[in-house]
Image 1 (cartoon, rainbow, N blue to C red):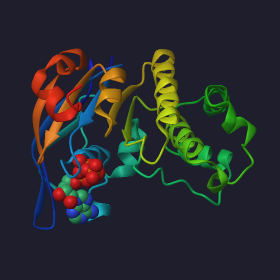
Image 2 (image 1 turned 180 degrees about the vertical axis):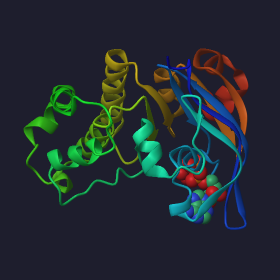
Image 3 (image 1 turned 30 degrees about the vertical axis):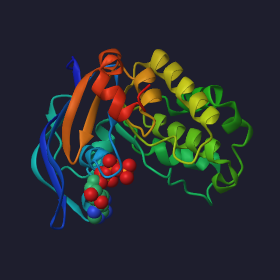
Length: 245
Ligand code: ATP
């Protein structure tokens, strides 16, 4: 039996050298839900994602306090590959394709973290969800447009059959319409799989539309949290994060 909370982050502190990045961040992601992580540049969103994925070390950072539990199991110190194999997939900022590999080969890279059967079925479903990837399966990933590369990064994450996907700024460098299409695809993926998602996003309005709840970070701390609808109605949140909308 799987616990109702997929991800629980308790008082996480982290630093890059002497520079503190997170000052006690706590958050949780309920099974099947999508949770947004919002805040200005440098607030600590990417660092939080890295802490969950076990990737702080390769960026010159360290977790200096707190705990991370995935499906009720402490994962701090496990290393990124082990965490991936437990079912945490990561769509990193900037997409980070293997640009010389084909679309299909990139999907195979995602399947390497998989511990369940059914990779062929998942690949077919990824191609159904993103038909352009199927059409271009033998093209080098580096030849895809930005939006197509983002779809491939999501497809690669799905190949691992994860219970949680960490999505870091998928809208970066994409036209608003392309971003909206990709969020619609993610909504469809959620409906079909009930995969949980933790979504870092600059576009707070869009993120609050897509996610059930959100945390707003400022200077390495959570300063607001709640259901998306409540945050959208909060005048202070509107003023500071939603452009006064
Ligand atoms: P952005 O939208 O710019 O990515 P963010 O909210 O994701 O912002 P982080 O990238 O987590 O913020 O950065 C938090 C703090 O840590 C910032 O002060 C940033 O300068 C610092 N930082 C991030 N990555 C590194 C790194 N590799 N080395 C040193 N400092 C870093």
